[in-house]
Image (cartoon, rainbow, N blue to C red; front, side):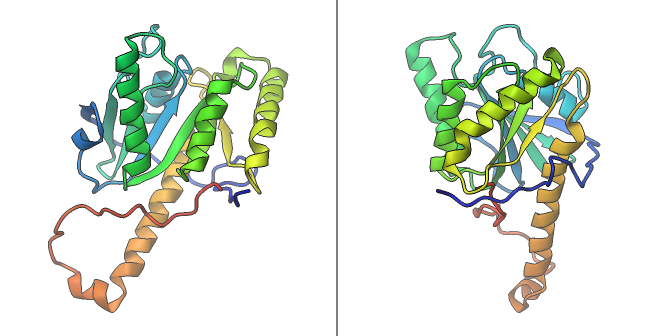
Length: 249
C-alpha cells in the first residue's frame, strides 16, 4: 500500500493564480516532438466525452484554447500551451475513444504512455472523471496504471452542473471507495463545472502552489555555493530532472 499526502485540505484552495496569457505551442504526435523540458508541465486527461476541452477553456479563460467537439476522441495529438510564459498546460488525448483504426488507437496509447512515464518536467496529471457516472472500469484501470508507474496525479470530477448534488456525492464516494485500498491516504480530488464556474480557483491553486514550490527549490539551490557560483551564467539547456515535489501517494 502506498503512502499519500494531500496538496489541499478539505478540498479548498489556498492560492489563486491569475492567467494573463495562454499561447498555443504545438501539437505533438509523440514525446520526441514535444518542446524542450525547460518549463513545468501540467497535463489533463480523461476518458472520451468527459468535458476536458470545455474545462481547459474555462480554466485558462480562453474560449477557443481547446477545441470542443461533439465527436468523442477528437483530440488525437498532445496539444501544448504556454501559460503566463512560465508553465505549460498539456491537453492529452482521451483514452477509450471509438474513432479510428485499432492501429491508430495503439499509436495513441503508446504516445501518451511515453509522455506520462518519461516527460521529466511533468509535475502533475489532472485525471478527469465524469461525476455523473458510477465508477467506470476504464477510469479505474487508468488510475491504477498511473499509481503503478508513480505518476503524480489529482482527481477532477467534472460536469457537476448536470447532476443533483446528492448524485454527485454518491458517485464520488463510490469511486473513492474503489481506489482507497491502493493508498494509505487517497489522492486529492476536486469537483468542477465549466458551466457554473465551480472549481477553477482550486485547480489553479494546485498549479500555483506547485510553481511556488519549484521557485522555492530553485532559490534554495541558488543559495548554495554551487548555485551562487553559477548565478548570471547562461543556462546550458533545459533541466532533465522532474521537480522533487510531494506526490499524492
